Length: 386
Length: 241
Image 1: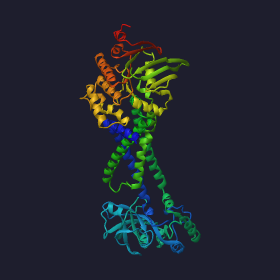
Image 2: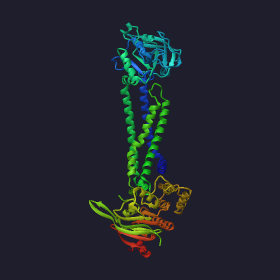
Image 3: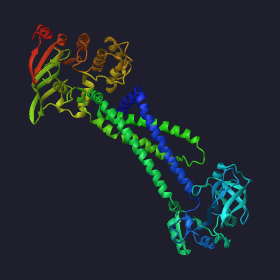
Image 4: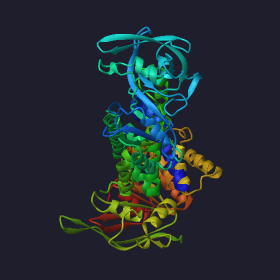
C-alpha cells in the first residue's frame, strides 16, 4: 500500500510538473487511438455491410445447394426443398430466402440496393420497426430497411420505382412501401424485402431465366427447436434432405465472397497501428528514463525501493496512456457524429472496447523495457562512482 | 564522551582493473561519534567516494566491517540496506541532488514520506528547517527555480529532516562559488552539531576543513593522516600542510 502511494505520488507529481511534455505524448497516443478506433469501426462497418442481414437472422443453420461451397449467390435450391426441410424433426421453422440486387431510381440519385425475397411470418423476414409486412403473391409491396430510409427520403406509403435489367432491356417496376425494418445490409448495400413472387418478377434476369416464372430460393434459414444441437441437426438435415449442404451462421458469413480477406486486411492494419503505438511509447519512455538515470539513482540512494521506482514508472505510463486514449476516444466520438450514413463506420461497443483495452495495454507493453531499465539502475549512479 | 555512531574496521575494497586487483580502499579504520563533523579529504582517485559509497550501504566492501548504530552493514540483505539508507542515513550529493519535479518543501518532505512520518508536525519541522536555512521564501520553488547554493541547502535539509544517525555529503560544494560553498558547509556543520548527528563530508577543497571537527586524509586508498587538533585543521585549511 505504501509502495503504491509513494509511487503514485512521484508519478503524478512528475506528470503534472512536466504536463506540456507528457501531454504531447498523450496527444500522440490520442492520434493512435483515433486511428485504431476508426479502423475498428471501419472493420465493423464493412463487416456489417457484408453480413448484417445474415448475422441478424433468427436462425442457427443455413441450407445451401450441394457443392455451392456455402456461397449464397452460388446456391439455387428446388422450390420443394423448403417443405422437406420444415418437416424434419427438430426444425422449429424454416424460411426460403431469395437474393438479388436492383436499383431504386425514383430517388434524386439512384440507390443500389439488395433485393431480398422472404416469406412473412417465417425465418428470413426481419422484424418490423414500423408499418406492416407485405402481402404474399405478386403484391408489388415492399419493406425497406432503415439504411434505405436514411439514404433517401423514402417513407412508408411512398411508391418507389426500381430498374432491373431483364434480358437485354431495362425494366421499371413500381412498388409500394408498406413497412420498415432495422438495418439489414447485405453485400454492402441497404436492403428492400419483397414477396417471392414479386421478387421473381422484378429481379434482374437473363433472357433464359425469363422463360420460367418460378422463384427458386438461394438458401433456406433454419431455426432449431434446440439451438444447442447445431452439429447434430446439421448432419440430420443433410441425411434427411437430398442435394443440400448445411452450414452454421458464422461459416456462412465467412464464406461471403471477400469477407475474410477484407476483415483480415482491416485487422492487420489495426495490429500494425497498435505496433506503431508500442514503438512510439516505448521510445519516448526509454529516452525519458535514460535522461533520468542520476535522478533515479538519487531516489534509490535515499531509500526508495526498486518496487517504488518500478511502480512509479508503470503508473506514469498508464496515466499518460489513459489520458491519450480518453482524448482520442472523445475526438473519435465527436468525429463519428458528423459522418454520413454512407460511410461504413460502426462504433460497436464490443469492438471499440476491445480496441480501447488494446490501446491501454500498449502503454505498459511499450514501456516495459524502460520500466525494467529503471528498476535496474544502480543507486551508485547518484554518486560519481562508475 | 559521546557514543560512537559510525565505526569502520579494517575496511578493504578491491576492484579488478585489466585483470589486476586494485585496492580502492585499503585497510581503513576509524570512528565517528554523534555530534562530530568529519572531513574525508584526498586527491582525486584516493578512494574517498568509494569509502563514502560503502558507508552509505551502496557498495559492499571486499573485507572489513562498517557499523552504523551498532548494526553491521555487510550482514544485511538488500531490503535491510534500503531500509537503513531510508531511516538512518542522510545524503547530499555533488549534483543532480534534488528531485526536479518536487518543490523545495516536497523534496524535504519526501524523506518523511519514505519513512511514513509525514504528518502535521513533520510539515511544520520541514518549514522550520528550510526557514533556518534561509529558504522560507523558496518553499514552493522547483529546483530549477533556485540557485546552486539554495539547492544544496534544500539537500542539507532533506539529509537531516528524518533524524538520521549519520549524514553523508559527497562534494556538496563542488559546483558552488567560494562564498556560497562556505555558507553551505558552515550551515551543515551547525546543524550537525545542533542535532547531534555524525557527519562526514567528502571534499577536495581543503578550505572547507575549517568548519569540521576532524579531518581524515586518504591517498591511494589508505588513511594516511588524521588531523584532530583545531590548530592542525586550521593550518590544513590554509594550505599549510
